[in-house]
Structures are given as structure tokens and as C-alpha cells.
Image 1 (cartoon, each protein chain N blue to C red):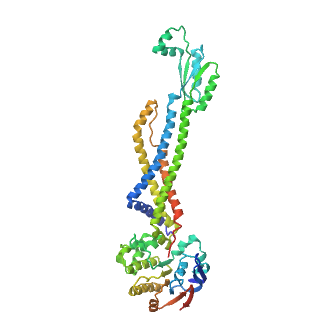
Image 2 (cartoon, rainbow over the protein chains, first blue to last red):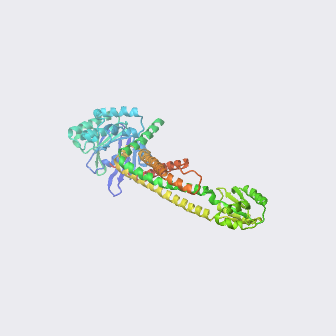
Image 3 (cartoon, each protein chain N blue to C red):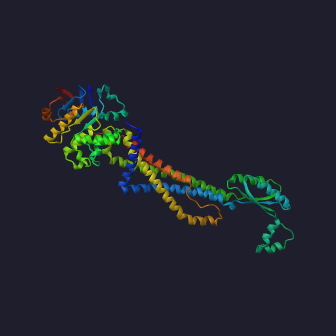
Amino acid sequence: MIRFDSVTKRYDKGRQALNNISFEVATGELIFLTGHSGAGKTTLLKLLALIERPTRGQVLFEGRNIGRLAERRIPAHRQQIGMVFQDHKLLEDRSVFENVALPMIIGGYAQREIRGRVRAALDYVGLLDNEKHTPAMLSTGEQQRVGIARAIVARPKLLIADEPTGNLDPELSLDIMNLFRRFNEVGVTMLIATHDLGLVDQLGGRRLVLEGGTVKADY
Amino acid sequence: MIRSLNNYFIRHAQNCLGALGNMVRQPVASALTIAVIGIAIAMPSALNILVKNGRALAGGLEDIRDFSVYTIPGATQEQAENLRMRLEKDTLIKSTQLITAEQALQTFRGDGEFGDLVSALNNNPLPHTIVIRPTSAAEPAALQALKNTLLRDPRIDLVKLDTGWVRRLNAILDVARRAVWIATIMLVGAVIVIIGNTIRLDIQNRRAEIEVSKLLGASDGFVRRPFLYTGFWYGLLGGIFALLLLVISLWILSGPVTRLVGLYGGGFEPFGIDGVTLLAVFLISMAAGLGGAWSAVARHLAAIQPRV
């Protein structure tokens, strides 16, 4: 489903984030991206979300080279990807419901469908009762779970997560990761970047170890 | 992606009402902006109405434009009457009136100072007079040409035509009209800038929302729409406020203006807001609103990209 083909990314200021990196991800796989900060994990995810374009090489998504995708097609591409971030990126002035509904509003879904799916997503992360609250009223862990609900509500083909458990304690982190795992079992391809090696050890699964912009290990 | 046409309309309705709701939530700031826009639109509109009615006034002060044609001494009344009937048919002339030498004499006889002088006269030295009232559409140049034609008629002695007054008034009105045009363009420009700036601030305040929306795959149209609707509402409400100001101003002015017009003997209706002005105010204010919003959106929205 995803293939990186000799991808290099150099930022304008000269910083080389990815150096001739190549790997493949099959549909439905769950992959952990590990490595120290600065190893290139975030850049890799940015290339997938077309927040950045590769300097060299090809990024293939479902067989298509998205590095050459026209600007006006980027929104449609991003709608296929669910994203979870370390800072939850929720809208503070909207309710939990409205936050989770946002991808579906963007996608032009009907009101009734939105209601059903948002509630299903909130139920999945265990926050159905918090529908009307604002993010400020929630704990860090709950906020992160709202972020996950938002990422899955539109049933994306790919889910990417950048340090989703960065701010959480070990117990919560495990809960969050198990949420991801359960969702992966439904068939959604996932790339999760994390520097918490202990957690990855606990969960098991394929991991891509990055260092200095290259793949150091893949197992 | 639009999943159905029905959704499309619902989205627009939501954006439209949502934009209005946002304005209501900041009542003081919104009201001030609307007031400024309303004043900026009302001023040129009021000037426009004044100039328009000034021209009507100039055209309507009919007797000011009357001019007199005097026959040569010795011309008979019959000749004068023939001349009058011929002139009546001219397209430039609305109506004519013949004052015979006898009638003229009678008028003087009744007039204190001249009365004694007239009694001392043996015969009537006065000519026949044809008072000509031109149509309101007759231009000074055309009337001057008519005067020249009349002077070539051997039966006519003198033509008293003072187009200077009318020419001066029309010249003043032309200057006024051009000045009003300039003022209108400047003030509409000001409205566009004001709304553009308001929208720019709105965009800045909603930066986080825009970034997240773009990250989740919102198209440019999706992100733009609420701001364009906000600009539309500012334009529309500003236009309504402008009309309110106009109605009130005209109502205040109507008393003195009617009196002024009456003093000049004018017989036309005091001004009001006609349908064309009404439509123009609405269209211009909505266009300025959308224009201002569009310029702000074009300049500032693209710059906001998702940050991860």
C-alpha cells in the first residue's frame, strides 16, 4: 500500500531529514517507527500526509506517486488518512462531538451519518458521555482519545500517529496503543511513530528503526 | 467531496447562518464595523440623490429659462400670432404666450411710475412679445442656435435669451456629479478595505481552526466559505444601515428643501429614494463586502498551512 523508493528529504535550511530511504508497507499492516528525535520519523509521516514533498525519490501510496500530486488534489488525499498527534490538535472552542465530527463535515457527509459515526467513534474510545464537553474539561488522556476518535471516524485507509502517547503515563499509554491495535485488526493500515521502546517491546509487531534519516533496522 | 447536492445547500446554509451567528456573538465590534460601513455608503448615496435632484430642479425651474422674442415695431398682431404658432411647433419649445403691444401697454399703464409716461404717449411704441418656454430637455447650446435662427427672421427685432444662468447651473452640477463619482469610488474603496481588514483579523483569530481543517483534508473552498459569508453579511447589513441613515437624513431635510423649492417657484416633487438608488446601494454594499472578504482570503488564507 505504501512504498518509499530511495526517498531523500532535505529542508530549505539544509537539514537532511531523510537519506535515501526505502521500505514497503502492506495493506493492513501495523508498523512502529522508532528512533531518537531527529531520526526522521515525523518527516516520514509528513511526506505521507503531503505536508512536505520529497526532495528525491518516490513516495507511492496505493501505487500512485503522491510526491507529484497537484496542489488541488492534496485535500482529497489527506481525507483518506487519519492523523493523531502528540499535541492533540483539538479545537478548544468546540465540543468533543464537533471536534470528532470535523473530518466528516469536511468530507461532506450527511448529518444523520455524521451523528451515528461520531457516536460510534466516541464509544470506541470510551468517551460517549463526554460528547458535549470542551477539550479543556478533559484530562490529557481523554483529550488524546478524542484525537483518536477524530482520526478514525471517517474510516480512513491509513492511520498515522506521531508520538500519540508522548504525554501520557505508562498505563494510559498501553491503553492507547491497544486502541490502535484493535482498530488495526479491522484492517486499517497503521504507522505509529514512537520513541517509547519499552511500549513497543510490550506490544510486539513490526518495527522500522530510523537513525539519521535512514532505516537502521526493519523487523 | 460533495456527496449530494442537498448537502451542498445545507453546507452553504450552515456557513451563511454560522457567519451571522459569529457576528452576533461579538455584538459591539460587529455593530461598530457595520456603522462605519453604513456611513461610508450613505454619504455618496446622499450626494448622488442631491445631485440627481439638483438636475431635476434646474430642469424644473421652468420660468427661469423662459426667454422673450420681440417683434419689430410696425409688425401686426396677426404677424405676431403667426410667428407664435410657428414657434409653438418647434420641438425645443414647450409652450408660447403672446403679449400684444396693447396688453403690454396696459401692464405699464397700471404700473405707478410708468403710468403717467404712458398717458403722455400718442401711439404705442411697444412691440408684441412672444414669451417662449423651452422644454426641460432643451440644452443651452440648442437654445442658442434657436436664438440665432430667430434673429435672422426680419419680423423679429430682439431675442432676450440669457442661457448664462442655466449654463452656470449645469456646469456646477457637472462638477458636483464628477466630485460625487470620485467620492463614491473612494468611499466604496474604503468599505472594501475596512471589510478586508476585519476579515483578515477574523482569519488570524481562527488560525488554529484553519490549520487543523487543512490537515484533515479541507479544500480551499471549504476553508474560504465562512469568511466570504461574513464579508457578505457585513456588506448587506452595512447597506441596510446606510439606507436607514439616508431615510432619516432625507426626512430631516425634506422640510427646508420643500421650502427652498417653493421659493424658486418650482413645481416638482421633493426628493426621496427611488428604486434605482435602493438597488444600487444594496448591490454595491454586497459587492464591496464580498470583494473585501475575497481580497483578505486570497492574501492570507494560503499562507496558513498545517504545522506538525
